[in-house]
Length: 583
Image (tube, rainbow, N blue to C red):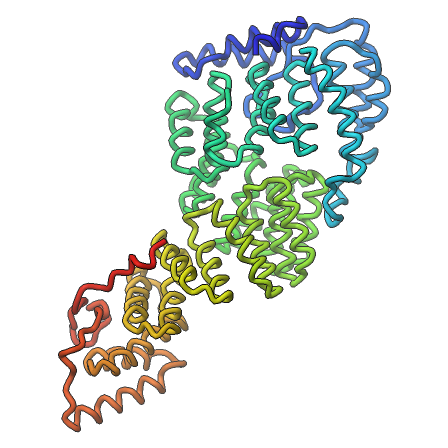
């Protein structure tokens, strides 16, 4: 980083700032605050290069008097989104500030076209790799590369160079440049976020020579959240709170997002509600909040949130997504899709809108549009498990199991402990007649905590297919125990299926008491009532004929005592060892 700050006064100034910011020590909060204020005071107005900033930094550059008039005029055109005019009047400018605005304007012309909203209309065009746009990006890359080799790029210039490299899919080079940008300009959060989007796993972090600055702690907490390493992320955020950032609404919102990612819905809702009290006009992350309200089917709360955000700023991406979720909850899927499209007109790289729009097209049975939406989501962020999972569901509807398997595997790699991914994988393996793999997936889904309470039932039915009656019985019994222990209302087709199978299983084993208890339970369900009554009559007839219960065949184990009609012990013998099908 020293060599990259030695060729121009501005870069040298930022080199000194980088040294001042080094060290991840939070012991002197006054010094941290002083650094932030110093950066803010010395920073000239810049174009919104990062788009977002947790601790925004702007380069303290020496104004070149010769470029001042041209820069002021160009900045006015830039603010009016006339990017080509801005670039035209900045030709030949030498100052770092003017050169950045010149290159950034040219980038936006190539990226967005003359009308800033035309690029957003690409929603359902084929992906643009290899098209003419890349030629313009390559031109920018050549120019920025020359400046980079001459060490004439400041932190913002390096950031822009990294963005161009990322757009050209030169990931390794982009990572190196963003790391360099973080060294030169540690408080530019945009560079950290771009770097975060290129990191695919924890191993990559080990090989990054990140600057030793307190901003690194914010970055690590953020990337851990993105990589679904929620425990590590929460530890980092807690350490930041303990260090003195307890009032940071950014950190509070990130903690809420982390709980959302592990589907701890109650905890996430509680934190978001508290956040709304502390920061009532906040719009950031409110789309995530609306996702939670949607899952809980909280229509009044979601309606209030949508109206509230609309009053604050109806032209924000998050507002459009919240309104889209509201219409989706009301089953008005066409209106929902329209608002997600509006969100993408505002920001075509907004991941949540692509994914949610894919869901809406799935609801409308428009599989081709859903596939396009999910593919765009993956193009924005390859770590979005929802898009991979959505693609799997789409191809499942199209009855293409090999495609399903590929996409569900990718989703599972991103969420290895999510039972929904494992159950979906198991169903794919079943359709492909790979039953051993299916059993592994269902068992693993149960072991990690089955969200939908379906893994054991599917595993039991698989054992039924393979005539493994004892294993099937054990799975059904464990399923019934889990359902009743959760205190859920047992008006569930699969519960009746489980009781019916167990009644028949115990009947075949000549265990009349157990068979009778299960048959009585069958009588409580409409779909198994007649079978239960018929079985009870058969048991009564056999007992009248002098048939006695078998003592040679032991039941694997029986129902919870609270469900049994005659206080039968919960277990007769130890349950079978299912470790043989554990992945």
